[in-house]
Image (cartoon, rainbow, N blue to C red):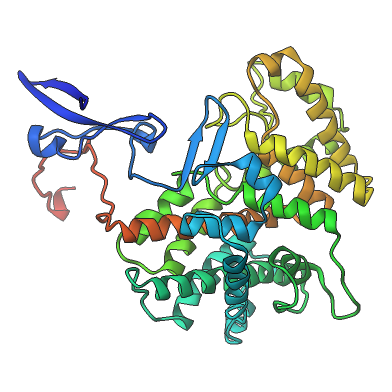
Length: 427
């Protein structure tokens, strides 16, 4: 028997169907609310509003659960690599060995970026923020790839996916090379995707480069953990821009801009900036733990707790181990990272943080890894974008294949009612 929700408004009684998701999440379908009642709902930030039905990611913040296409994030991080998970997220099923090999081969076909793109990146000052440069370069890819993708043609859609996965990695690393004043590198088709990220970033023309396996494994896990996260700000942006039938590159460029914000993808950058401020103030971690517990102190401990995960961030448990391995392997002696370890150790046993479930989150540990690799804080969100790319592609593809209508939220107008025009000489 189907469930319904009853709304009584201005003496009238209305019934709305209740939809139950595959994980028993109820949703009241108010698609016909305005047509039936003349009223709309008001939900700032859309915290209680579902914008779509999706098969991609399940997230339960209360229980600390994250799954891609039904697979637990713990299993994927341990048993799969990033391209394998990307294929799963975008196409719905784990690839066979043959499919995965073909996917990687087909991505390699599109890793060359038009040389004229260099003219665009040369136009930015060295001081430009990498996320601003990445957003512009992603949008510019549209000019060099003007063909409109027919989403109902599987071949065209697959080609667009491979092209986006190949070119985005290259231009993302170019933003770092621009910042550092280094010559731009090219994809090496003899290496894997994450290994290519390392050489694209760090290989110099003055000598050979070999990526550390522990570092590659840690980054592979980080990219997997960031691959998708349900209808967050940047993903919703990609979907709503794509709902106008804007192309994949243009929609992802908008997602990059949304991710740039410090309340979203910039969180791991905020962690390192906090740690640097603590060091400048003498490096006393205990002092800042006390400030965090003082309700009258405006200081916030960045990288602890999560707005979605009310218990623990399942991604943090996975990446903590990888962070420890990277620090041990590289033997990094950095006072900033020592402060981070002190904060982590104290927060995990301090009753104030434990009782409030303010555990270190994925942004805390990812920031530590990036710092250990010598990556500038301005680049942290770019690495987040590389990991999130398959999720953006999958969400755009799902929205277009499902023929979702153009996004068009309503509003409650609170301005002036009709007024008479005031002539210039009477103002």
